[in-house]
Image (spheres, rainbow, N blue to C red):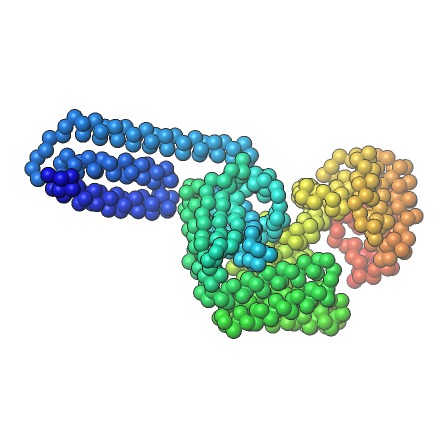
Length: 610
């Protein structure tokens, strides 16, 4: 009897085929359980090892026992099956040991670095295509990951602004992770292939910067929208395995289904970024021309996807930016009105879109600032409408850092405590906002005005840490030394003044030097050096010329420093000078004038406010 006849007689093919099918089903079930984080990833490897080792075992069983009737197991069969079992156990043990060692090593690196796995940093994908022709695709994948992962409960994801800070950076992953304070980094590459595009998405652990997972998506320029969605789901799956918790993308996050409209929108977004770069280089004319190109592309998108609000939101943002770049008041108001109109159209399509409400509220507040004093009724209406839009935006999306930021500026006119809360929420939502320096400064000055000196110190220190070359955070360190929060240190005051002189922009260096001198005088007064204090304050007054400070804004600061030196008469005289220049000035409520309120010489200044 030939070998093939013996194989057929033993039903070897049927037995092996049945094993392969059953094993494949078991692998698929295990894959789903691992994919959903119900079991550790190593379990899939163990089952796979058992499945592969089981193939020769199925062949042996089929060969020795495939015939009808009862067949005894010969020693050779038992020996070979035992060898396969030992091989499976050895390989499984090695896999489990490697998995545990890798997890322990990464956990130790994360603990040593003080990082947490659930804090995710998404970096802008690199475009390796010829001439950077798919840069808009690389950016789109990045921004989709940031937007969608940010919606996942349990994850803390860095913002687009944080990602932009490291775009094109050659820093190693572990350095970026430490700077961002994240335990997991996501990066990627877009490359061309003969028949389309390849997007490679890579995950790094932040402790040592090692890559631990990756996924590849092959796509075509016509199928980019579906590829983007697959990329987001793949990253969610990999994070489920690595972070060890449920990471599920919520339905409805990505509503558009028209791939052509999405791709055209991404091109418009790329052109908008080019316009912003031109604006930063102060080439306003070229910036406006480029904004117009982006707007034209968005109009085509709206034809392809008329129910999609995103093009209108982007148009509103561009119109607002154009308004901010202009100087002629009629043009400023014209583009502000266009921004409001674009936002209205987007809100008509999506009434609860936090982004649309944010840009409408921001544009109305900007217009309010332009109309102050010229049209009280319209200004009052714009202020109320802007506040309503911004508060609704942050209610819908508490992570809307931009809306929190503008709202904090708006609220300084009505409720300083609420303004500081909004500023803090803005910074905590996105520490890399373009307005971050202004937000931090608002937290410093607002807490100073409320006598919250511990909070003032906290935010002044944070600003100095984040922006060591920003002169404003040297200024606030000087101011802190004049408060009860800090021990008066005159030597430190002079050092900070020298630092302020080196950091302050040339066009305001003389102004900041006079401010600094006044504060050094106040520090000397607190240090019980009244003669030195008066000498320094007199020097500050001598340098306070009309050219240095046309509005005499430094006078109240110098006046307060004189009160620290016990010279209330000079202080009141300086406040009288300031009141003559600024009739609307009020000295009634600020804590700095608490000790002057009972003095007869001070009462006329209070009476003038009524």
